[in-house]
Length: 107
Length: 121
Image 1 (cartoon, rainbow over the protein chains, first blue to last red):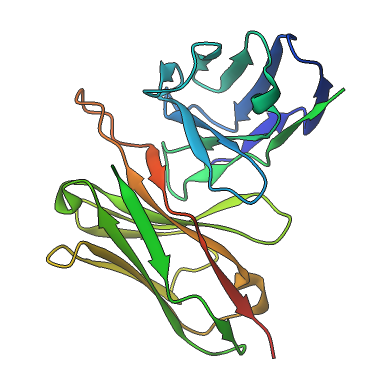
Image 2 (cartoon, chains in turn blue, red; image 1 turned 120 degrees about the horizontal axis):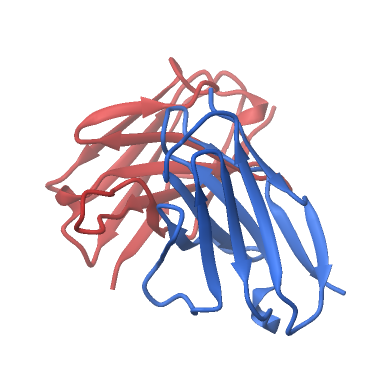
């Protein structure tokens, strides 16, 4: 099975900060990596698909980079509504797997 | 507007069976791959099962116990869960796969609100 490891598991930041979250796959997954945001009590929301593509309606402060085994989700200027948990998800090989999540908290 | 509405969640005893349904609307249901993702209380997301071009796929923890199916005439996705265990306790999300028009379909672009399944005696 392909493992995806996110880091950090949590981080504290202030509004306006630039935030980066890393996701590393245990083997190459080309660009089959998606990013989701989840707020408490809510369903996940797609942010980025195929590593670098911004989902329609998602603010441009979110961006994704990487290919192969190493991927980054960046938030250029953190907004109050961005405090949430973020997950990466590989869809290269079944079983498709999620990272363990990164909780972005208020500093 | 795309909507996915799960139903069928319940409290079930270990070893029991349950069927979840997911009614889709606002899109051409038959044209898209569909799947289920679950989240145990306080835990992360776990991919459960998907139906991709008519082929069912399963995560290791549910293989042989769960069966995914769809009825395109009713715009409904199902998850039949048998031999249920305590570790199946979770919120189950139904999700639709996207299609970017350039051949990439391996992402979940819309999710239902989730339905709680509790396995306990």
